[in-house]
Image (cartoon, rainbow, N blue to C red):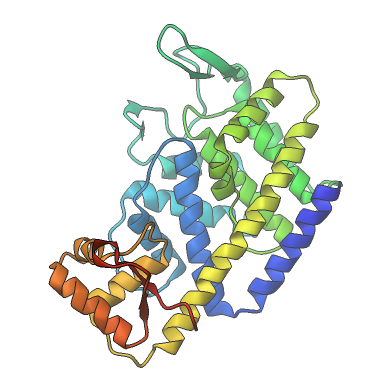
Length: 347
């Protein structure tokens, strides 16, 4: 398959680049990747997590001493634990590990507003497990999972296959593993998120690395409609899963392209702070610069600076002008209310 060869080539190039940037920057890149991975895998399911909480939880797990850490709730800490456990190359998949992941992901025992059975397989006590959409009375059934009384048997087969080396490429195994788990749908909630964790686990084994340098979840979030469409077509179709495997490999290919942008951001941060290491700035300025580096959207104005820093607009203007005088920021074209600013990227 040409797409598989292309993906393998990009995978090798990315790993080579990451190995050449040193341990400190590798860890920073892992912080960015894991943070986005956790946020996006939840967004795919319609759940929006607090960015600062996720980033702080990941940083603490990685042992990174970064500024601005905030407290994170048990749900987010549980997701971080699951992600880091899955990419540990010394771990095999077992039923106990899967049930433990489920417990960690739902520490309060709720999926959204509803009480769910946590740390055990679904029992279908309220009827067959179905994936549906649409208003009450006009629901559309996208997929109906196998009967609950067969889940334990199916999962024993699944974990055995998962841990057994195969003759085909590990990326193809990751595609099959994702689809198979989603089709069994063993839990009352969280099946999509755990399927993507299992994908990361198999891809980590494929890389031979215990850290993530790219994220399938980020790319799937960008292509969420296509993701659900190809899953539905495959699950409702015959036994041919080739279209799903092709989509999965091409999605991974695009995920590898996106990861290069994240690497560029990490390298920019490193060059920026290295260049301005001896320059004295206040805590407010440092916090806002970090915020800009972490993906600030839109144009930065004095009013936005004042709002984020919780200061007056006069103070915000003095902060910005001070950074411009020190060469750390530049003013974009525009006057009056249209005046905006950006970090100096001419390093």
